[in-house]
Image 1 (tube, rainbow, N blue to C red):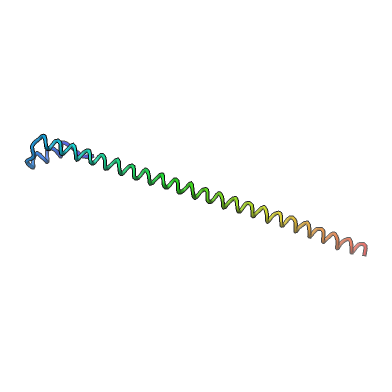
Image 2: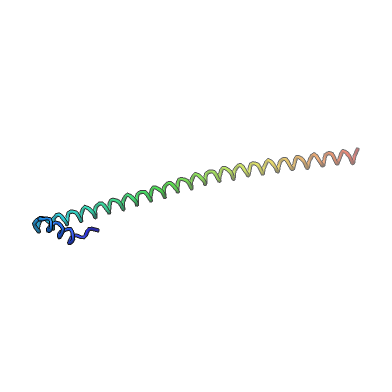
Length: 100
């Protein structure tokens, strides 16, 4: 924030007439406020972009989790089929040994 009174006094001490010194001080203050607002807008936009990046990353991770879940279910299904096949083979061998 610009101290317009101090700026006006500095300009007066430098030999500038009061109306011009006050106008210059006001303009400097206005420009400083606009610059501050612009800087805040840039920072806000950067934060929003970061949030968007995070949302995209979360969606990517959710997709990978879904793919891993599907692969895990397929592996469990294949394991179940293999176990059933092994049990059938064991029963078949057992029946052959018993009936011999």
